[in-house]
Length: 527
Image 1: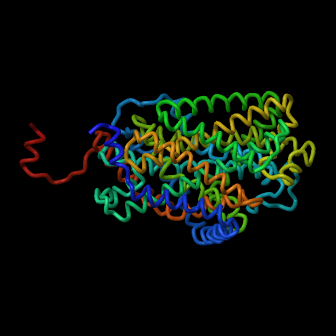
Image 2: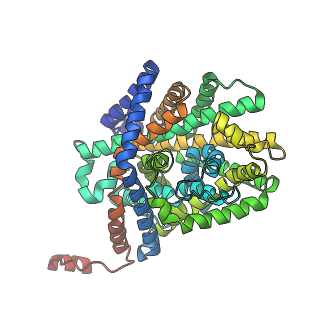
Image 3: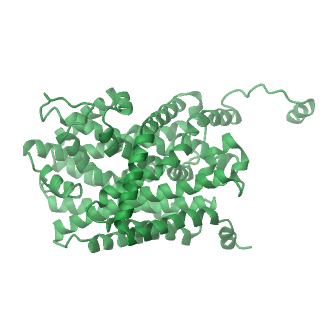
């Protein structure tokens, strides 16, 4: 039997049919009855926020704390993936990691969110006596928190450790259900396992929703930018053309695989983003950006626990923190699989450092450069950014900031390009992860990867067609699908330390437990 045929026979058709069927049905219903789908998504969102919001806050905090504790412990030296040397160098490795969460919306949100929190100080820090200048730091810090340490930790730390143990060290398929292996045992991989199938299905649907959202955001962002830069009408047709262009790039990249297209696109993207950041630092308010970044990062660290556990304003939490936490949790299993694929040979300490510390700091600096510039111009001239933001929404924020910068048209075009590439990297890497979920193979069939990239784009275009509330619909849909996935990501919080200990024993980093063995076994070990 040739390799291609063998791969086809390994496709999990039950998971494929149920998850793909659900998304296709959702697409058809969105086209046939937009109002009904909008109401259904909205009511489901309210339920999710009400009954799962506090659980998500505690889960993300616990995931970060356990991950950092493992990195600082004697288990931090444990090597993952049964490989002595890393497959990817530091820059290549971190580039692929960064082009996941940051790409998922960092470009879209980096300009608008800090301004929103500046105009209306988050309720935890609201103070009637606060001046406009004093509102900068808590506003920027709140954005840092939403795209910071806990957000990244839930994507590729404790769950990744468990997945790499099950796949590379024990030889089981790389699927979301492998997260439960240390708790359930090898029966979780049985084709008749209802729990295993459910874990794979909800993970596929959730990562599809998490990827569809950024693609939709991109359609809005680029549609507005094209109108601003080239006077092209900002219509649903224009946004749909943008999405078609995006998914074509993503499909080509996904088809070429992790070692070619995805890796190349990620490195190109990070390099381009670095050039833009340097350009903004030179042309924009340099010292204001640096001062604001340092002050807001310190403010976030100082108030980290308060921000993590704040429960005072449920409406605000549902629109901001809980929405983001649901979005990132939905990405969790697929992101953990993707990071598992590119992290062989890395230690637990390196994994936690890269994903939960380094990547958040880079994300925060990106927000400081883009959003911090907007804050500076808003302070200098009230309404310079906020007017466009309030009248047109978040897609207008980047262009409003670029209007204030020398060579603004060039910078705006640069942000337009990097936005497209950023979201393409999310679409291609998540299409790859879904294909891996359906096969358990780190080299899934090319047609499967392309199919999911195209499906993501089709659903995003359909959701944009719902109308003026399209952004809210995209956000709500993302959160709803995260409910079952969050239950899947709870066990790794206590399973990862156990797995790390077992691997440390196997690698001779700590003494093996004193387990009684027979005389025959002792003689066999001696010989």
